[in-house]
Length: 320
Image 1 (cartoon, rainbow, N blue to C red):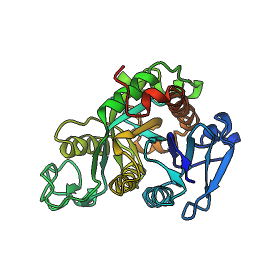
Image 2 (image 1 turned 120 degrees about the vertical axis):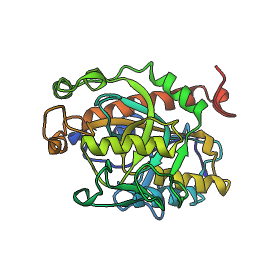
Image 3 (image 1 turned 90 degrees about the horizontal axis):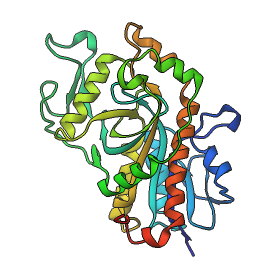
Image 4 (image 1 turned 180 degrees about the vertical axis):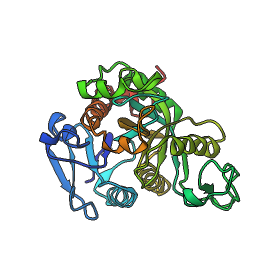
């Protein structure tokens, strides 16, 4: 008999709890996930799915697109779990645009856009007048429409579920950290404010990039690929791959894609503070633990609400 899943949480990596910045261990240790089920095909670093009797289960995929897609497919097609009525909550860390939010903030994703399906010219060789070296597949210059489209390059998450998750998340008291407060004090605007729960779009790339110019490229890329509806907020390395695998599972009848939500908490800024060298952003690692804490706080609260009021959520997002 397959295990009944009501909420499936997907994290990407785990660490020793003493290191504080892993995404998964808070779920395992604080949410009482006392059952482990080994699933063939999962990462050797996280070979089991952890859960409890009320239907909360945790998958840790491994970092990066290949690991995310492979692990989600392995679980969804294993036959070990009934995901037909499950809400799926991706809960991980990301880099954030300081014009949108700050380190420690939690972003409820409306659009997930893949930023790596592109032509690229080295920045030292781009033609005069080009803002950057990234060109949509099949296009001749930046900001021209893509002529070649790749399945999974854009996902729009269910808006009703996103609104419900954002509303529940807004009730959660987020953590803060003195080191992060000192970091954000160097940023103006939204980047200098305390953490909060936000809505925005997420860009998936396998490269941990940083810089004002690449940030502008990310903003435009999201606008172009969402028809102007998305606003770039965070960058991460897995979401579109995870969503492709979930979409395949939905097409096969294993789950309902309208029950998928993505939370990303900011662990770092995607560019240096004004007046500081671009490469300095790579060394600012003070926010990883705070991000992992806050995405757990919001995600666990949302999961608890769904499980605690399951009759209202069983057939879909409640109207209230």
